[in-house]
Length: 295
Image (tube, rainbow, N blue to C red):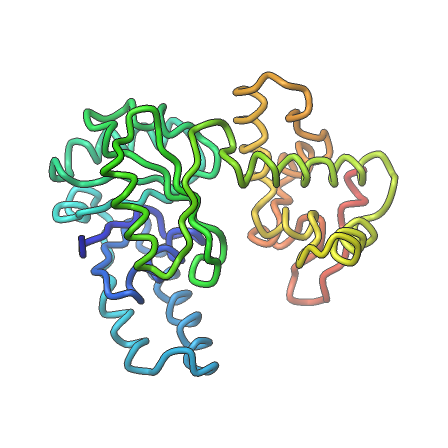
């Protein structure tokens, strides 16, 4: 399985493409936007430069990694010879269902179809195909080239052969695969996102400020990044989407998103990617809390 198609050239997609290409897979990176594809290649090149500077890889390794990546804007053309497809598109069920329906039509019969979804049901996504036994979740962590974990999620019909194949492939990427079952949020986000939501609720009710909440979790709990800063890096819109999936799936009040999170997303304050979330990421000044204007 040396031909891997990656759908989506955003943060996760370019990280996944980078990781496969660096481990000598031929990668077809697919996105509808030429601009997004160019930006992804630039990001991968910049990240490889950092690795060269730290003497983790050589200039030759960087050149080979980039040579392993080919970009496409046409889905059918990009997946024509893929042994594995990893979908890393926007976290929207309707979009993923359409993509997997198309993949089922365009891909060879033996192609494994994986999704990097952080919360949406693998079983539901697989229902859009005629090969649910070959559909699986590969939930990579951000930043993909550095983070060791891959959460592997089997849907209701995912075969043992598919699971074993993806576990072995993850290991070849020098990752640590951990297999879990298909429930809303899986394991990582079922635990993480409610914690982030509770941190936002703590801010919303005036218990403490942004920097104080993050400092307590870093200094007292040993977290490398505070929950509010982490939310900014994940994307507040992504956090909100995951909470909606879990709230709809479990019907439990504890998964209801905090009103402050809803307001910030509606205002377009999504975190790092928008330049502003719980902190200000504009280039003109150091990061500082800006959430107070939404309280």
